Length: 287
Image (tube, rainbow, N blue to C red):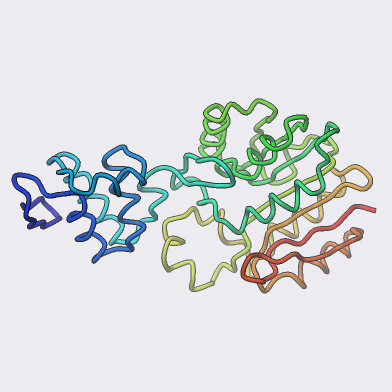
């Protein structure tokens, strides 16, 4: 059977079997991506596919899947094609207006939670929240905390707010503005951020998924540290004594970020590694 943009010739008529369609797509794109996209086209969980491989796929679902495979072949991220991305213990709605949450950022969440005792009420800020990944993870794990999530993008904030409603998280407030500006002179026990940290001229920005993500959420100046400098400069006026600042950054930027924190008066400064044993999060405590 031929579908526009996707030529399928299988043994089952009038419609091909799911396993044959998936096998054909997996020769063109990553097999995991193919399974995610087929599940999305069918509005089924991915695990469902493996128990129903001999089911036939109808023309409408096949056409939808064909379009998704074509767009993925052109490089569009799976997260944008499906509109969702798993993070921490939940799924998030995402769009090209938000950065795609990545597993490395879960390390930032782990380190923040280790500094947020569950038995006391805390005030926490997430700067540049995007889809709300960090803020929502912290708010869900620490229901006694009050979380403020900021972002300069009105569209991103709308997505983050929708995610909060979908997850039933109500101990979170969203504010529009750059980095610390929306914090309004308030002080917090902990500030966390996954800011842009790629250099403006980095060739990786023209490769893979990065080509489709919002540039303002990826790149920040000649050395990639402009946003981090801004946050480190302003964070001390928004932290209580002994408050923590945690920043995700590039794997080669740990030393530079540690120097910035120490120069701003932070103590207990250290860089923590991700699962690939690379510097990923640098943190410090306000003396």
